Structure formats: C-alpha cells, structure tokens
Image (cartoon, rainbow, N blue to C red; front, side):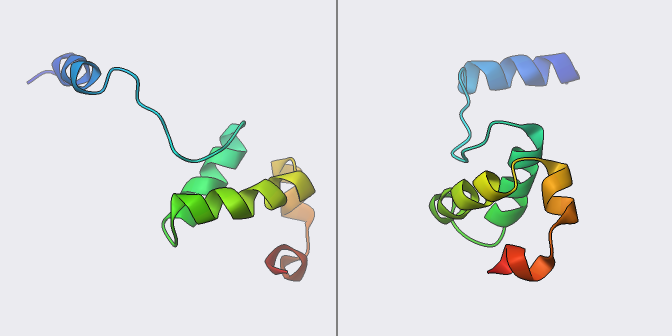
Length: 71
C-alpha cells in the first residue's frame, strides 16, 4: 500500500479529525500532548489554560523557574 493510499483511506474514515486538547500555537500543542500522556485531556485543558496565560510563549516558559511552573 502506498502512503498516499493510506492518507486517502484515513481521510475517508475520519474526514474532519479534531484534537480534544485546547491550543493555539505549536508550542501549546506540544506542551498539551506531553501532559496528556500523564492524565486526561480534560485535566490537561484545565491546567494549560492557566499555564499558557502565565507563559504565553516558549521563551517565557524556558526562562521560568521550575518551582514557579509547578506551583
């Protein structure tokens, strides 16, 4: 099976895929996916709403103190 055939098949099975995680940027999606391995998407969305407000960019979170992020 060719890769394009696989993509076409997936498009037919799931024509409008939707991610349950709330995100607006690639950075936010990456963080949410990493967290989702540890808990439910509902809980991730709850936590990331606050996290992304406090640290809106990757640079902001990279400069943050880990204890501030945890608390």
